[in-house]
Length: 253
Image: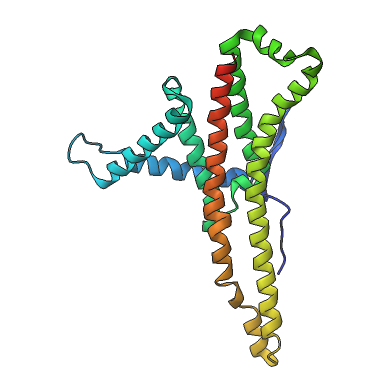
């Protein structure tokens, strides 16, 4: 069994260049990301259509519960004045969870590609910077790099830039490690199956060796951690860091 962990497959490259960006590639990550967005959009439309004030359906009850939990998560950690961040954090969490768990359908998780988390981290970094400038002004923002003493300015700048890098790499590293480990387990079990049934002489052994009998069972157990637990946990951590960084940025001003 050949194991390929080289990254997302590139389906098509546009024949013309974009300014600065160069050639645009339609990759597996991009396609699956669109599938994720379509899934989330479809679920939201299904949960929120035909809403009622009285005699609500179970579907509406689930939708209201999700909205309530999102409000509690954001407002409980950031405060009432940050209520307007609820849609952003909820969308970020949903996108991360579905992107992580979509590997259960046999698709490559978009979060196993660093560009996905890097894009999220850049958006969060822009929001953090905006909150700092909003709270303390442009002058106060740049003056903050010189505190507590001027000589620490380079280190403060590096610390500022390390925020989006650490957020992206933490999420990416955990998801990619799960993809790689699952791939290695499947490859090892497929090789073991071929070796075991290869002991049977003749065509019977050759045929049975191509059927991954040993790949049933153990991968399901590892999937409980790498796909379900780790996928949801990494989404939670990313969103928690997002709201804490933004709230702290507003207070620093």
